[in-house]
Length: 350
Image 1 (cartoon, rainbow, N blue to C red):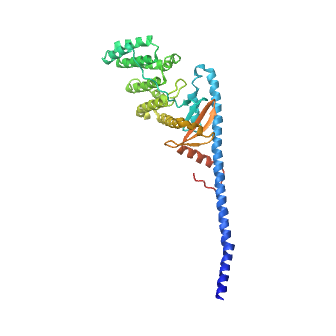
Image 2: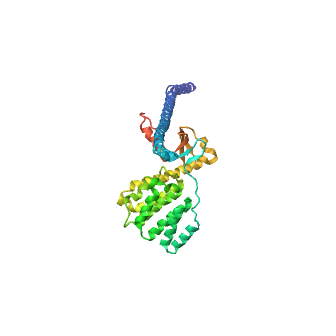
Image 3: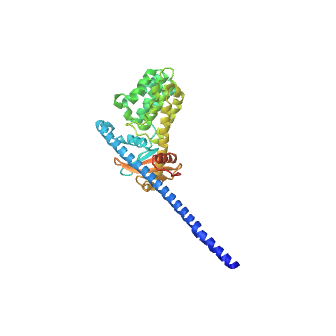
Protein backbone atom coordinates (compact mmCIF):
# COMPACT_ATOMS: atom_id res chain seq x y z
CA UNK A 1 0.00 0.00 0.00
CA UNK A 2 2.85 2.36 0.89
CA UNK A 3 4.55 1.81 -2.42
CA UNK A 4 1.29 2.24 -4.27
CA UNK A 5 0.61 5.53 -2.41
CA UNK A 6 4.00 6.92 -3.30
CA UNK A 7 3.46 6.07 -6.94
CA UNK A 8 0.08 7.73 -6.94
CA UNK A 9 1.65 10.88 -5.36
CA UNK A 10 4.25 11.02 -8.08
CA UNK A 11 1.54 10.80 -10.71
CA UNK A 12 -0.41 13.57 -9.04
CA UNK A 13 2.69 15.80 -8.95
CA UNK A 14 3.40 15.00 -12.59
CA UNK A 15 -0.14 15.87 -13.54
CA UNK A 16 0.15 19.16 -11.63
CA UNK A 17 3.35 19.98 -13.49
CA UNK A 18 1.72 19.23 -16.81
CA UNK A 19 -1.51 21.03 -15.96
CA UNK A 20 -0.08 24.13 -14.21
CA UNK A 21 3.67 24.64 -14.50
CA UNK A 22 4.09 23.77 -18.18
CA UNK A 23 1.39 26.17 -19.39
CA UNK A 24 2.90 28.87 -17.17
CA UNK A 25 6.34 28.32 -18.65
CA UNK A 26 4.92 28.38 -22.15
CA UNK A 27 3.00 31.56 -21.39
CA UNK A 28 6.14 33.24 -20.05
CA UNK A 29 8.08 32.14 -23.11
CA UNK A 30 5.45 33.56 -25.46
CA UNK A 31 5.32 36.82 -23.47
CA UNK A 32 9.12 37.14 -23.59
CA UNK A 33 9.13 36.45 -27.33
CA UNK A 34 6.37 39.00 -27.86
CA UNK A 35 8.27 41.68 -25.93
CA UNK A 36 11.44 40.92 -27.90
CA UNK A 37 9.56 41.12 -31.17
CA UNK A 38 7.94 44.36 -30.12
CA UNK A 39 11.32 45.83 -29.19
CA UNK A 40 12.78 44.72 -32.50
CA UNK A 41 9.84 46.31 -34.31
CA UNK A 42 10.33 49.57 -32.43
CA UNK A 43 14.07 49.55 -33.09
CA UNK A 44 13.50 48.90 -36.77
CA UNK A 45 10.95 51.68 -36.94
CA UNK A 46 13.39 53.99 -35.20
CA UNK A 47 16.16 53.08 -37.64
CA UNK A 48 13.74 53.78 -40.49
CA UNK A 49 12.94 57.19 -39.00
CA UNK A 50 16.66 58.05 -38.71
CA UNK A 51 17.36 56.90 -42.26
CA UNK A 52 14.37 58.86 -43.53
CA UNK A 53 15.82 61.93 -41.84
CA UNK A 54 19.09 61.38 -43.70
CA UNK A 55 17.17 61.16 -46.97
CA UNK A 56 15.25 64.32 -46.11
CA UNK A 57 18.53 66.04 -45.31
CA UNK A 58 19.93 64.99 -48.65
CA UNK A 59 16.92 66.35 -50.53
CA UNK A 60 16.97 69.61 -48.56
CA UNK A 61 20.68 70.04 -49.20
CA UNK A 62 20.22 69.28 -52.88
CA UNK A 63 17.55 71.97 -53.12
CA UNK A 64 19.79 74.47 -51.35
CA UNK A 65 22.68 73.66 -53.69
CA UNK A 66 20.45 74.17 -56.72
CA UNK A 67 19.36 77.55 -55.37
CA UNK A 68 22.98 78.48 -54.67
CA UNK A 69 23.94 77.62 -58.21
CA UNK A 70 21.33 80.08 -59.48
CA UNK A 71 22.87 82.75 -57.26
CA UNK A 72 26.38 81.88 -58.48
CA UNK A 73 25.20 82.23 -62.06
CA UNK A 74 24.26 85.81 -61.23
CA UNK A 75 27.63 86.47 -59.52
CA UNK A 76 30.35 84.83 -61.67
CA UNK A 77 33.22 85.82 -59.36
CA UNK A 78 31.83 83.40 -56.74
CA UNK A 79 31.51 80.40 -59.00
CA UNK A 80 34.72 78.72 -57.76
CA UNK A 81 33.87 79.23 -54.08
CA UNK A 82 30.85 76.99 -53.61
CA UNK A 83 32.26 74.50 -51.14
CA UNK A 84 32.19 76.66 -48.02
CA UNK A 85 28.51 77.49 -48.39
CA UNK A 86 27.79 73.88 -49.31
CA UNK A 87 29.23 72.50 -46.09
CA UNK A 88 27.77 75.30 -43.95
CA UNK A 89 24.33 74.27 -45.16
CA UNK A 90 25.18 70.66 -44.38
CA UNK A 91 26.01 71.68 -40.81
CA UNK A 92 22.73 73.55 -40.51
CA UNK A 93 20.92 70.39 -41.53
CA UNK A 94 21.50 68.22 -38.50
CA UNK A 95 25.23 67.59 -38.22
CA UNK A 96 28.10 68.42 -35.86
CA UNK A 97 30.72 68.32 -38.57
CA UNK A 98 31.15 67.48 -42.22
CA UNK A 99 33.82 66.03 -44.50
CA UNK A 100 33.60 66.59 -48.27
CA UNK A 101 35.46 64.87 -51.09
CA UNK A 102 35.22 65.73 -54.78
CA UNK A 103 34.35 63.10 -57.37
CA UNK A 104 38.05 62.19 -57.65
CA UNK A 105 38.33 61.44 -53.94
CA UNK A 106 40.28 64.61 -53.16
CA UNK A 107 39.49 66.20 -49.79
CA UNK A 108 37.63 69.50 -50.24
CA UNK A 109 36.67 70.21 -46.64
CA UNK A 110 38.06 70.56 -44.05
CA UNK A 111 40.81 72.58 -45.70
CA UNK A 112 44.23 71.32 -44.62
CA UNK A 113 46.66 73.10 -46.95
CA UNK A 114 49.68 74.89 -45.51
CA UNK A 115 51.10 78.21 -46.62
CA UNK A 116 54.69 79.33 -46.53
CA UNK A 117 55.48 82.26 -44.22
CA UNK A 118 55.62 85.76 -45.63
CA UNK A 119 58.98 86.91 -46.96
CA UNK A 120 60.95 90.18 -47.19
CA UNK A 121 62.77 91.80 -50.08
CA UNK A 122 65.57 94.35 -49.57
CA UNK A 123 63.18 97.30 -49.55
CA UNK A 124 60.97 95.71 -46.91
CA UNK A 125 64.00 94.76 -44.86
CA UNK A 126 65.18 98.39 -44.87
CA UNK A 127 61.70 99.58 -43.90
CA UNK A 128 61.55 97.10 -41.05
CA UNK A 129 64.93 98.22 -39.73
CA UNK A 130 63.79 101.86 -39.77
CA UNK A 131 60.62 100.87 -37.95
CA UNK A 132 62.62 98.92 -35.36
CA UNK A 133 64.74 102.01 -34.66
CA UNK A 134 61.65 104.21 -34.22
CA UNK A 135 61.82 106.14 -37.50
CA UNK A 136 58.18 105.42 -38.29
CA UNK A 137 57.67 108.12 -40.92
CA UNK A 138 60.63 106.98 -43.02
CA UNK A 139 59.61 103.33 -42.59
CA UNK A 140 56.04 104.22 -43.60
CA UNK A 141 57.24 105.82 -46.83
CA UNK A 142 59.23 102.71 -47.75
CA UNK A 143 56.31 100.40 -46.92
CA UNK A 144 53.98 102.46 -49.11
CA UNK A 145 56.55 102.50 -51.91
CA UNK A 146 56.73 98.69 -51.67
CA UNK A 147 52.93 98.49 -51.93
CA UNK A 148 52.90 100.64 -55.06
CA UNK A 149 55.65 98.66 -56.81
CA UNK A 150 55.01 95.09 -55.67
CA UNK A 151 52.74 92.33 -56.92
CA UNK A 152 54.21 89.50 -54.83
CA UNK A 153 51.49 88.61 -52.34
CA UNK A 154 53.86 87.81 -49.46
CA UNK A 155 55.70 91.11 -49.89
CA UNK A 156 52.39 92.97 -50.19
CA UNK A 157 51.14 91.47 -46.95
CA UNK A 158 54.30 92.46 -45.08
CA UNK A 159 54.13 95.96 -46.56
CA UNK A 160 50.50 96.48 -45.57
CA UNK A 161 51.10 95.18 -42.06
CA UNK A 162 54.12 97.44 -41.72
CA UNK A 163 52.05 100.40 -42.92
CA UNK A 164 49.39 99.68 -40.28
CA UNK A 165 52.01 99.44 -37.52
CA UNK A 166 53.67 102.71 -38.50
CA UNK A 167 50.37 104.60 -38.83
CA UNK A 168 49.44 103.28 -35.41
CA UNK A 169 52.73 104.44 -33.88
CA UNK A 170 52.22 107.87 -35.47
CA UNK A 171 48.72 108.02 -33.88
CA UNK A 172 47.02 108.38 -37.25
CA UNK A 173 44.00 106.36 -36.16
CA UNK A 174 41.62 107.47 -38.90
CA UNK A 175 44.10 106.36 -41.56
CA UNK A 176 44.48 102.97 -39.86
CA UNK A 177 40.71 102.45 -39.93
CA UNK A 178 40.52 103.59 -43.55
CA UNK A 179 43.30 101.18 -44.51
CA UNK A 180 41.61 98.23 -42.80
CA UNK A 181 38.43 99.06 -44.71
CA UNK A 182 40.29 99.49 -47.98
CA UNK A 183 42.03 96.13 -47.60
CA UNK A 184 38.93 94.17 -46.61
CA UNK A 185 35.91 95.69 -48.32
CA UNK A 186 36.41 98.53 -50.78
CA UNK A 187 37.05 98.51 -54.53
CA UNK A 188 35.46 95.08 -55.08
CA UNK A 189 38.02 93.55 -52.70
CA UNK A 190 40.78 93.82 -55.27
CA UNK A 191 43.37 94.15 -52.47
CA UNK A 192 41.91 91.35 -50.36
CA UNK A 193 42.02 88.99 -53.33
CA UNK A 194 45.83 89.38 -53.49
CA UNK A 195 46.25 87.80 -50.05
CA UNK A 196 46.18 84.13 -49.06
CA UNK A 197 43.39 82.92 -46.74
CA UNK A 198 45.84 82.78 -43.83
CA UNK A 199 46.90 86.36 -44.46
CA UNK A 200 43.29 87.56 -44.62
CA UNK A 201 42.59 85.78 -41.33
CA UNK A 202 45.55 87.53 -39.71
CA UNK A 203 44.29 90.90 -40.96
CA UNK A 204 40.83 90.21 -39.53
CA UNK A 205 42.34 89.34 -36.15
CA UNK A 206 44.68 92.34 -36.25
CA UNK A 207 41.73 94.66 -36.89
CA UNK A 208 39.88 93.41 -33.80
CA UNK A 209 42.99 93.64 -31.64
CA UNK A 210 43.75 97.15 -32.88
CA UNK A 211 40.18 98.31 -32.16
CA UNK A 212 40.49 96.86 -28.67
CA UNK A 213 43.80 98.66 -28.05
CA UNK A 214 42.19 101.93 -29.18
CA UNK A 215 38.87 101.42 -27.40
CA UNK A 216 38.83 104.92 -25.94
CA UNK A 217 38.48 106.50 -29.36
CA UNK A 218 37.25 104.13 -32.08
CA UNK A 219 35.86 100.89 -30.64
CA UNK A 220 32.34 99.96 -31.74
CA UNK A 221 30.08 96.90 -31.61
CA UNK A 222 30.68 95.93 -35.22
CA UNK A 223 34.27 94.99 -34.37
CA UNK A 224 32.94 91.51 -33.54
CA UNK A 225 30.97 90.89 -36.73
CA UNK A 226 33.46 88.16 -37.63
CA UNK A 227 32.09 85.99 -34.81
CA UNK A 228 28.80 85.60 -36.71
CA UNK A 229 30.14 85.77 -40.24
CA UNK A 230 33.55 84.14 -40.26
CA UNK A 231 33.07 82.10 -43.42
CA UNK A 232 32.96 84.03 -46.67
CA UNK A 233 32.62 83.20 -50.38
CA UNK A 234 36.11 84.65 -50.94
CA UNK A 235 38.41 82.47 -48.84
CA UNK A 236 38.71 78.79 -48.01
CA UNK A 237 40.34 78.96 -44.60
CA UNK A 238 42.30 75.96 -43.32
CA UNK A 239 40.66 74.56 -40.20
CA UNK A 240 43.62 75.39 -37.97
CA UNK A 241 43.45 79.00 -39.19
CA UNK A 242 39.76 79.32 -38.34
CA UNK A 243 40.34 77.84 -34.88
CA UNK A 244 43.31 80.13 -34.17
CA UNK A 245 41.63 83.29 -35.46
CA UNK A 246 38.29 82.82 -33.71
CA UNK A 247 39.98 81.96 -30.41
CA UNK A 248 41.97 85.21 -30.67
CA UNK A 249 38.82 87.22 -31.43
CA UNK A 250 36.89 85.54 -28.60
CA UNK A 251 39.68 86.46 -26.17
CA UNK A 252 39.00 90.10 -26.98
CA UNK A 253 35.22 89.75 -27.24
CA UNK A 254 34.85 88.39 -23.71
CA UNK A 255 35.76 91.84 -22.36
CA UNK A 256 32.83 93.39 -24.26
CA UNK A 257 30.27 90.60 -23.83
CA UNK A 258 27.92 92.66 -21.64
CA UNK A 259 28.49 96.02 -23.31
CA UNK A 260 27.60 94.88 -26.82
CA UNK A 261 25.34 91.90 -25.97
CA UNK A 262 27.44 89.47 -27.98
CA UNK A 263 26.96 86.31 -25.87
CA UNK A 264 25.17 84.59 -28.75
CA UNK A 265 27.93 85.62 -31.15
CA UNK A 266 30.60 84.17 -28.86
CA UNK A 267 28.58 80.98 -28.52
CA UNK A 268 28.28 80.78 -32.32
CA UNK A 269 32.04 81.22 -32.76
CA UNK A 270 32.78 78.50 -30.20
CA UNK A 271 30.44 76.19 -32.09
CA UNK A 272 32.36 76.91 -35.29
CA UNK A 273 35.61 76.02 -33.51
CA UNK A 274 34.07 72.77 -32.27
CA UNK A 275 32.77 71.99 -35.74
CA UNK A 276 36.20 72.54 -37.29
CA UNK A 277 37.82 70.23 -34.73
CA UNK A 278 35.21 67.49 -35.18
CA UNK A 279 35.43 67.73 -38.97
CA UNK A 280 39.24 67.54 -38.86
CA UNK A 281 39.15 64.46 -36.60
CA UNK A 282 36.69 62.77 -38.93
CA UNK A 283 38.71 63.69 -42.01
CA UNK A 284 41.88 62.24 -40.50
CA UNK A 285 40.06 58.95 -39.91
CA UNK A 286 38.40 58.82 -43.33
CA UNK A 287 41.70 59.54 -45.10
CA UNK A 288 43.54 56.83 -43.19
CA UNK A 289 43.77 53.56 -45.15
CA UNK A 290 40.80 54.58 -47.31
CA UNK A 291 38.37 54.30 -44.41
CA UNK A 292 35.88 56.46 -46.31
CA UNK A 293 34.99 53.43 -48.45
CA UNK A 294 33.95 51.49 -45.35
CA UNK A 295 31.12 53.89 -44.50
CA UNK A 296 27.71 52.81 -45.77
CA UNK A 297 25.44 55.07 -47.78
CA UNK A 298 22.54 56.79 -46.06
CA UNK A 299 23.06 55.28 -42.62
CA UNK A 300 25.00 56.16 -39.46
CA UNK A 301 28.26 54.27 -39.05
CA UNK A 302 30.76 54.42 -36.19
CA UNK A 303 34.09 56.14 -36.72
CA UNK A 304 36.72 54.84 -34.32
CA UNK A 305 38.23 58.13 -33.21
CA UNK A 306 38.53 59.66 -29.77
CA UNK A 307 35.93 60.84 -29.06
CA UNK A 308 33.78 58.34 -30.94
CA UNK A 309 32.02 59.93 -33.90
CA UNK A 310 29.37 58.73 -36.32
CA UNK A 311 29.23 59.37 -40.05
CA UNK A 312 26.59 59.16 -42.74
CA UNK A 313 27.57 59.28 -46.42
CA UNK A 314 25.66 60.60 -49.41
CA UNK A 315 26.26 62.47 -52.66
CA UNK A 316 25.22 65.96 -53.73
CA UNK A 317 26.38 68.31 -56.48
CA UNK A 318 29.18 65.99 -57.57
CA UNK A 319 30.59 65.76 -54.03
CA UNK A 320 30.79 62.85 -51.58
CA UNK A 321 29.58 64.27 -48.27
CA UNK A 322 29.97 62.75 -44.82
CA UNK A 323 27.74 64.26 -42.16
CA UNK A 324 29.36 63.78 -38.74
CA UNK A 325 27.66 63.46 -35.34
CA UNK A 326 28.95 63.08 -31.82
CA UNK A 327 27.66 60.21 -29.70
CA UNK A 328 25.73 62.60 -27.45
CA UNK A 329 23.96 64.34 -30.30
CA UNK A 330 23.23 61.14 -32.21
CA UNK A 331 21.55 59.68 -29.12
CA UNK A 332 19.66 62.95 -28.66
CA UNK A 333 18.47 62.81 -32.28
CA UNK A 334 17.33 59.21 -31.84
CA UNK A 335 15.45 60.04 -28.65
CA UNK A 336 13.78 62.98 -30.35
CA UNK A 337 12.72 60.72 -33.20
CA UNK A 338 11.49 58.11 -30.72
CA UNK A 339 9.27 60.66 -29.01
CA UNK A 340 7.52 61.24 -32.33
CA UNK A 341 6.71 57.54 -32.85
CA UNK A 342 3.13 56.73 -31.70
CA UNK A 343 3.91 53.48 -29.87
CA UNK A 344 2.24 52.83 -26.51
CA UNK A 345 3.21 50.41 -23.76
CA UNK A 346 6.79 49.92 -24.93
CA UNK A 347 9.96 51.09 -23.27
CA UNK A 348 13.06 51.20 -25.48
CA UNK A 349 16.30 51.79 -23.61
CA UNK A 350 19.02 53.36 -25.74
